Image 1 (cartoon, helix red, strand yellow):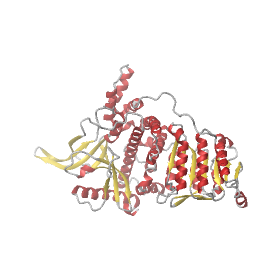
Image 2: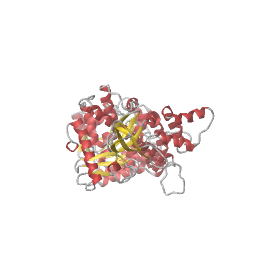
Image 3: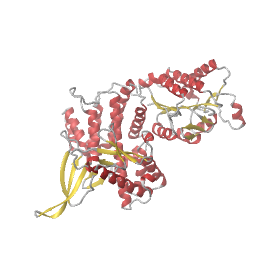
Image 4: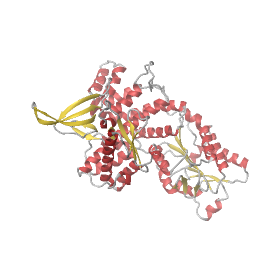
Length: 587
């Protein structure tokens, strides 16, 4: 969907009223079209360099307009504590095939135009001198009000220009189609405050307008109808029950919705199936539970949760295997690029994590495996990683959609009507995302609680007795069981099973209650982030990601929490030493 990215370099501690007003007025100007699903608006109220870079990498296939308001100079934008330099931004914009306009509504940004044109940006609106904050806000609000009323970029610029001249007729404007200002020429151009600069040969961009219709045409299917139609064929090669449904349909025999739902949920590992269950469970109408079987913002949020749960699981499978391969000397020291990406992931502040694409970790580990000819534990992840790196692949486009939706939801900028429209799109993208992931039905997941040695006179050869929980969807709770094996798995671990092989996903995925002898149920958590300043590890609940997270830190007094702290910190530091030759807190 056509995307507008609005960045306001405001201060969280001391927000500027004019920037706040400009953001409010621009949002209001675009609200009607965005709410109707004609285009997508991503806002950044307190933009930072990392946030902007992360967002541009995620939305670049669909970005049409980039807007910046805040302090700036001829070669940089002031984003929080760090500057974003024009040369680097231009390289990012060069990867945005749909980009029409960069609007730099800050002081003296004319010096950035040449680099932006060389990067392929068709239109740039920039300034050649310091500008009054209130006038800058007025210019931006009028420009987007005109765009929102189906005016072209050229027409919107002229209307904004007219309003400023009505306020102050001493302000100068300039327009050119042959930018090449340097030195003395730029100084002379400084007589003009605002200007619109068109890259030669790209004049058609001046006539570009915001879309006025939704990109998805046709009647909207009932909620979940597309999920059933997409999931069963994806699972069929790995699930006999799903294949039977397809075979029956080929013979003209319809399968009822209840059977389809049960087959889908029983085929997938429980952390995944539980999020899908919330989407496809029908509202019984006689409970206080929350249901998601209607197109609205809540369903959009649950689609994003389902996506995040799956992509994080795939990422942690690859990180867990990387650990084993390095221990077994099949992978030596990581190349700098891949090492830096993993370092960034583990040390990134909480505020940046919602803007970070987990596909970067998947691609980084995939490059390590491929360069070392390492077979994948989940062998199907090799083609999936390749698809994730191809921006034109439907799987990668689905990832981009969910990454963008997650950003928008985090900003609190989704109105009710827009949430309904995005939920329709989210279901379609979840189908595209799951299409190559049917192989998940091939793998089991278990939570290993405790391992003891079993031997008596009837079983003279000692075996390892595993107290464990099968992480598979059942409609009467998870199955606790005891299994005996000649070899042992790791204590207090969450494992993924491939035939007779297993991969320990802990400490990236843990069962909190495996550290508590009195707990009867499972509480599966994903590593979420590391608070370096306070030396805290935070884990989020997989089944209920909105509840209070688990914080692991020093000073625990309860025995189970003390054991959990020792084990989790010890394992993560061992992993960090292997990758970075430092403990996690020293990165």
